[in-house]
Image (cartoon, rainbow, N blue to C red; front, side, top):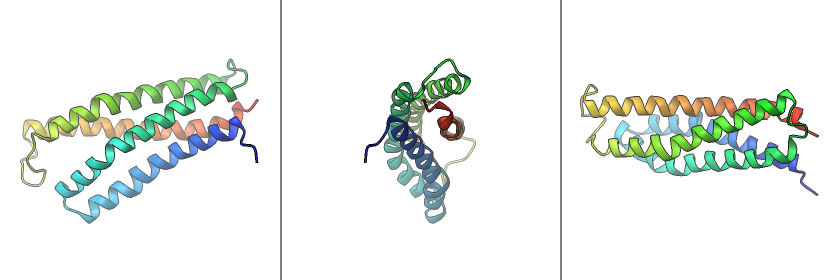
Length: 156
């Protein structure tokens, strides 16, 4: 059976939405529910590089495939999709190459999340980076869901 470019585009978007949903709403909460904060943080920290790369690669693939499926790129669904894909690439690259590495360096200064005072400068700075990362992750999720919903309007 021949897989069309449109089907491949939708598959990439579905993997993107599903990957973010499973990691954000199932895996991470299960790990933090099952382990102490320090251990859970270590486990999730080991998963993050692969997760961030996964999201970035799928965003890049969706961007590339967009040009094969968009048809008339002047139509509103195509323009919105293009904008959402650009936003996703910028956010993914920022999280992968800036926020996450900064958080890792900062996390090395924190001996224990369970024992160190929450108002320590390192913990406060880490909390800000973590909040930014979480917010951008949720924005990427919404972005990818909207792209998936707009997908049928792109079909040539």
